[in-house]
Image 1 (cartoon, rainbow, N blue to C red):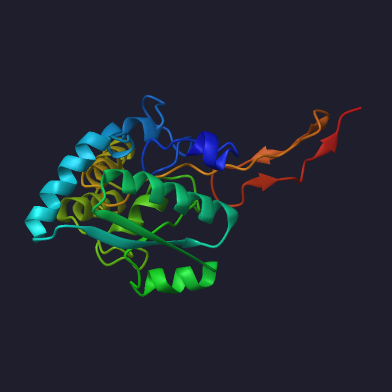
Image 2: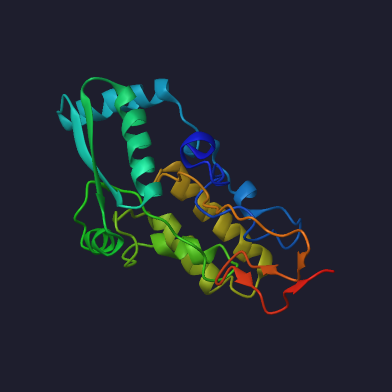
Length: 224
């Protein structure tokens, strides 16, 4: 998907929280690497077929049909088409309909729960895993799929209250929370977004931020 479909420098994800956002205050290890749950970001068609069979039986169903909603951008369309082809490899009893609509409409539908499955994205407002993880607390307005886990909620609450002033405890809370989200597959991370740019090698002084406003050009200059 990242190499052939998007082909824009986007990376395979290690999890929900993006790589390069935050480091362990004690060891310097990247949060995304420390919280990685490989099964949550690795395709396993054999296991997927097994789980689908079990799920259909549990629900008393014989087939799976749903609509996958995404933006009507080039990336949204190519992502939807790719996912459709991959998911339908599960068997002839699986049918995915793609729906690509304008961003504002997609956002409204997501907020109102008017979707079967939706492709969406998130960028951190500040360089801390909580900027991602707080979205999946029970009842959060951005938790469009209404995923809920009591232990997850407890860990996020602790990171914001009792452990807020203990850097290492807070870090551990967030790592555990991410692992719970990924182990339960509350969401499916698809890729870490990137953008290809052509820069003059003599252009210096730019600052790239991993969160918020990405580029700071205030100190930009052209080297002679």
